[in-house]
Image (cartoon, rainbow, N blue to C red; front, side):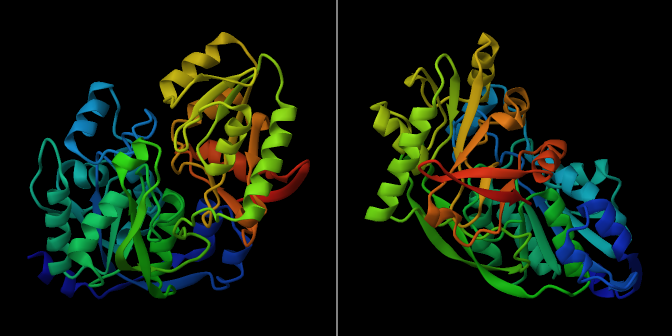
Length: 413
């Protein structure tokens, strides 16, 4: 039934391109230049939409993922709510001007149907509604969407969800990830919900090439133990827009120059540390070098708290950070960026949530990165889950400490 419906659709609609870009994406120059005509005909296309409702639930509480029932049960017991549904609705809200150009197929219940209903879409439901969902549900719904011959499959999840889809979809049809997980190392994800909506819009205009992109994932158990073990699992087709699609994560190079560079940054940060100030230190090899020189056992992949150059709390979650902020001390956040991608918030450090950032203030954020990590990056990225906060970040440039007492100004997009 769904497949016959998809094949019948062949009408064209007209979209006011300039209005959309100005209202929904703050008119970046690289878009305005490329869209000179006021209206473009758009052929109605079928979009599959799958939400993994448990993706990202382990981020803010420091569980570093939700793969496995035991970890999911722990997240639920701690009172964590789904962020995937919120971001799914944010994506559909951004895409709302094009409802008339989309034939939407959604997963049942929380796997897409609820978000589509709340945003006023017409849709066809695929699969059965379950109280608790699993990877088997994701794969079953994806299989039905492949059989329905959808033009594009959009999913809300992380690397684990991408791996589930890889097993079913492979390169049969293009896939776009809307990031809601903890781990997003794969190259099929848009940078945020708004970017995902713009990618879909440009896909409707047939203006994006489709390329094979890497699907990567890390071993979550090793991740929780402070070891980063990432692997390439295969390739899926994805719309290619380099400004809006993140690249796969690049590992930090291990070389004498890199180690020297990390040490120089660490020495400068340590010399600049103020007494009785709380330092919230994010994950990464560059930030861990700071703790190494302090002879403090910081976690490689967690968020840790320092006062007076001493580790006071290790591998903290959002709630623990917010509790520490109540003590009235001055606060600084120290983060590094993800190699290749340029993210400073929203990837692997969700414990430093938008709530935390609002309380600390943008002026109290210190970004550190080695020369090799900033090379080739035209801009940094943020995806805090708070559109207002993300917009505030984008309105300013960030000073990145790239060596001893040497800063580089980089914009955020």
